[in-house]
Image 1 (spheres, rainbow, N blue to C red):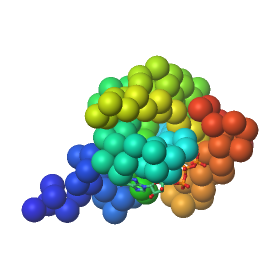
Image 2: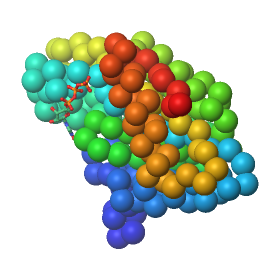
Image 3: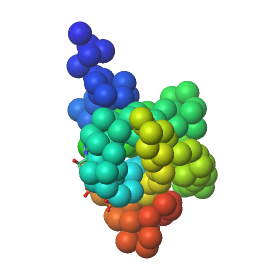
Image 4: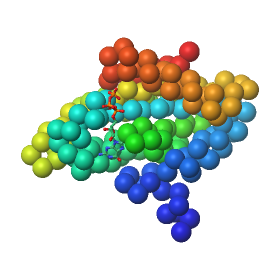
Length: 164
Ligand SMILES: Nc1nc2c(ncn2[C@@H]2O[C@H](COP(=O)(O)OP(=O)(O)OP(=O)(O)O)[C@@H](O)[C@H]2O)c(=O)[nH]1
């Protein structure tokens, strides 16, 4: 029951509620060191649904989660933050490390065309990365990651941006 209540049905990663609890745990641990969050949003995702169908869109979200997990290390937290928004929390991670992970995820997604029925679906994402700042609450931290993600979208998509 507990696992079901914590898990996103579509992808198997943490659902939003559990993800935020876990992110808060990462923030508390960061009191002694570093931590990063990377907020990823698939580019032009509405178009994927509109042209290839909702099931294809679901498949793309699943593949994106798998790709993220492949680039994470033990102790990292991956969850579904919103519809096509995925959050990675990286404990013991500097901004440099967080940007490196985000860049590898971005490259892997862009390199991997997804096939659904007979459709080839190119997938890219924007990623906003923020290192925790001392004294910052979880929502302030996530807000900075979201602002960086907005900048990634605004400046052309398929890119990683470090939060100010
Ligand atoms: N298939 C599928 N679609 C979803 C799910 N959750 C949200 N969406 C869709 O995700 C789309 C998000 O679209 P927008 O927020 O307009 O963003 P976008 O088209 O990706 O545009 P940019 O982010 O600006 O590149 C909407 O069409 C939602 O219906 C889901 O679980 N499955």
